Length: 319
Image (cartoon, rainbow, N blue to C red):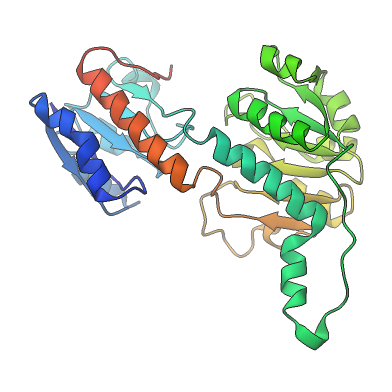
């Protein structure tokens, strides 16, 4: 079979070659493109004739799938797969997998880090301190200890984030749709409906995928239910939040702040995007998953997925 990795995985090329060696040893061909592209025509060309496609988090167009009759398997080196335009009728022919789990710690740590930044105004303080004699004075912040953290989603990332917040001395509550996580219960997590969670939480942190059911799960009405002192943290997926409504809620003082890593699009973000000019926000360019340690683990999981598929034992499949 012909296996193609269409983009870099943020690890050295030497590591890619080492991880690809078992594929070649099994008699398969491996092609690696070590430059990133979002050009549709280029992606179609790179995908040509491949039986197995490996990608990361760049959008993968349906045309690249439709114009490749050999394609049998798309291996996504990422947790979310909503950037892959795999039509329903193609799912019978093409398997899809992800690399879930590689960035659990990285995302959990950023969620806490954004909370601390919003609470202690670290980014704002850094900027103000650099003004030298124009320094306007110290900021008075807040502590996590004793606060109530509300989780929307308590899968593996949500639970690891909960462990960190609990270590800070926070109380844990959650909304998780129809299920409860046993480990979260051991941590002392209390489950409740969404409205109650929003009303009680000092910090609301999101840990759910982007689906039809979670699209704009938080919007104008939900922000009105939150405390005026509450902050929102989103290191999950951008479309889970109506970010225009979030900007309005921040500017109107309905909530106190937000730490956001994900948006309706990948950065660069258009200058007229309302959240860019919202009050009391800390914005990062979708880097929750992006640490040295996570990239190494991601590459290992992705290549293991490919090898298992070639052995007839596909794993980490997405329905």
